[in-house]
Amino acid sequence: MKERLFAKSSPLSAVFLLIFTFALQAVSVRAEPAPTHWWKGNLHTHSLWSDGDDYPEMIIDWYKQHGYDFLGLSDHNLTQTGERWTGINTNRGRNVALERYIERFGTNWVEQKTEGGKTAVRLKTFKEFRDKFEEPNRFLLILSEEISAHYKVLPIHMCVSNLREVIEPREGNSPAEVIQNNVNAVLAQRKKTGQPMIPHINHPNFGWALTAEDIMGVKGDRFLEIYNGHPFVRNYGDTNHASVERIWDIVLTRRLAEFKLDPIWGTAVDDAHNYLNSGNEKSFPGRGWLMVRAKQLTPKSLIAAMEAGDFYASSGVRLKDVRREKDKLCIEIEPEEGVTYTTRFIGTLKGYDPKSEPVAHKDGSPFPTTRRYSDDIGKVLGEVKGTSPVYTLKGNEIYVRAKVISSKAKTNYYAPGDVETAWVQPLVTGVK
Ligand SMILES: [Zn+2]
Ligand SMILES: [Zn+2]
Image 1 (cartoon, rainbow, N blue to C red):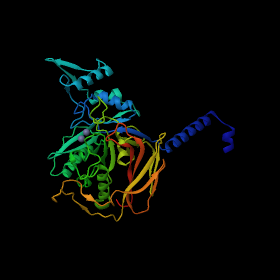
Image 2 (image 1 turned 135 degrees about the vertical axis):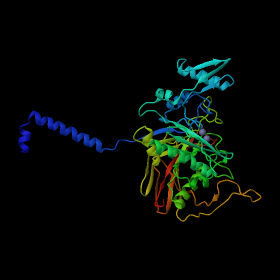
Image 3 (image 1 turned 90 degrees about the horizontal axis):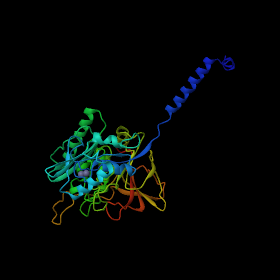
Image 4 (image 1 turned 90 degrees about the vertical axis):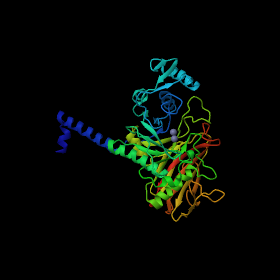
C-alpha cells in the first residue's frame, strides 16, 4: 500500500502531500515559543500639560530618537485630553520651547492664537499626537497619569500606566490609607474596563512623605520607584532617613516574611520636567528606565511581563539575560568596552532579627520616618565581578535581588558620583 502510494503518484496525492507538509510546518511554527525582546521604556515624565517645560511631541521625539521603545507621559492628575492652551508671553523658556517646537514640527502642525497681545499655543491631545509617533513593535505610547494625592502636607504620588479615564486623587486618614485608596481606584477602573493597567508608588522620599511602614502593607500595587532621576527626590536618604533602596529591602522582607504578601518590584524612571537644557540640577530625561522582556510591544504584553517581574531597572547597564531559576539567580551582562562590573546580591535570610526602633530627635521624641532595622535586612549575601554573575541559593534566603554596579560614571546623573547601574528584581523563595 505504502509502496503503491509513492510509486504511483497522482496529482491528488501530490496535493495531499503539500497540504500535509504545510500542516506540519504550521504545527512546528506554533510549537516554538514566540521570541521575546527587551523593550526600553520610561513610565514617568511630565509635559506642558502639567509642570513639564516642553510640548508632548518634543518630549516623545526625544525619547524615540534616544532608543526608547515605549513612553508614558504621566502628567499630574490628568491625561492629555480635552482643550488646553498654554500662554507663552511671560515666560522666556516658553518662547524658546515654542521656537524649537515650530522648527521641528512646522507652522501647519503648531496651533497658535493671539488675543489682546497675548499668544497661546494649543496643546495637542494624546489622540492627536500618538499617530505621529507610534509604530508597531518599534514605538508605543502608553496613556498615563501621575495621581498626585496628599496626606496633610505630604505629597503622595502614584503613576498609573495604561488607564482609560483620569483618576481623581483620593484622600485617606493616614499615608498608608491614601496609597491604598488610590491603588484601589486604579484596580476598580481595571476591573470595570477589563483593560490591564498598573499603579506604581513614586519617589517615597520626596518631601519625606512615605516610610517603609506606610508602603509594606499595600495590597494590589506591585511597583515602587527605587531610582528616580529628579534631583529633589532624595533617593539616597540621609542620616535620619532610609534610602529608597533600603526602604525597598525593608518592604520586601516584611511583606514576604510577615504579611505573606506578594513582592513589590523596583522601577527606575526619569520623572523628567526640564527639556530645554541638560544641567544636572534640572530633571532632564535619560536618567532611569525599565527594560521589559516581552513578546510584543503592547500595553498588555508589557504589563503582563512587568507584573511577573520579568524586567529590570537601569541607569545605564544593559543585561543580555536574567534567569530567576528555582535555586539560582543568573545574570548575563552586555559588556561595554573598558567597563568593569561588580554585582552585589542583596537579600534577607530566614531567622533575621525583626526588631526595629523609631528614629528619635536629640530630646528622644520620635521622628516620623522609616524605623531603624537590623543589618540582617537587605544584607549583601555575595559579590561577584565579571559579566556572568550567579547566585546559588543556600536554602535560607527569603529573597535575593541583584544590583549590577559598573565602573562607568553616569554623565547625565541624578547625583554627582553616580555610576551606571542595573537593579534586578528579587528571586523570591519558599517564604511567600
Ligand atoms: Zn511626583
Ligand atoms: Zn512626577
